Length: 128
Ligand SMILES: [Mg+2]
Image (cartoon, rainbow, N blue to C red; front, side, top):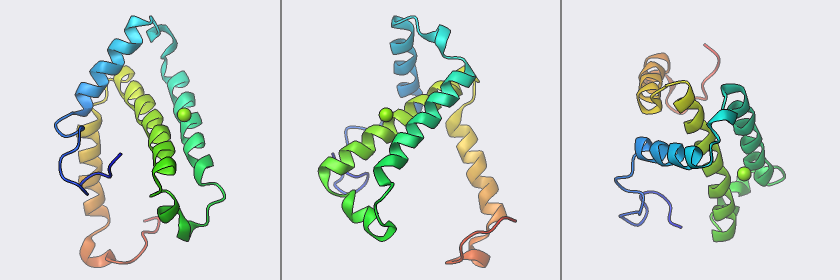
């Protein structure tokens, strides 16, 4: 597995969230699982997967986490749990008819306004 941007082309290049979401919808529908994918159930599954990701880092000292998780086996485990998080988040977005790329871009634009780089460069953001 390669980290994004470190070694040129990645198999994920050109693959969109919409394409992944469509594949997930097919996976779900082939199993007739849409009946279980109400928003509450998807949120609980999402939170569970975030917990599994957090568990990997639970007792790793903060200043060692990046180094430890650059080791291929640990990076793979983190990637698996991050993928689970993304899959449930995309499922939730699908059920709620949210275009996550559009929503995230809007959120980023709002954050640029809320946290001007000129004022906050190198300063941890506080509740504003
Ligand atoms: Mg998992």
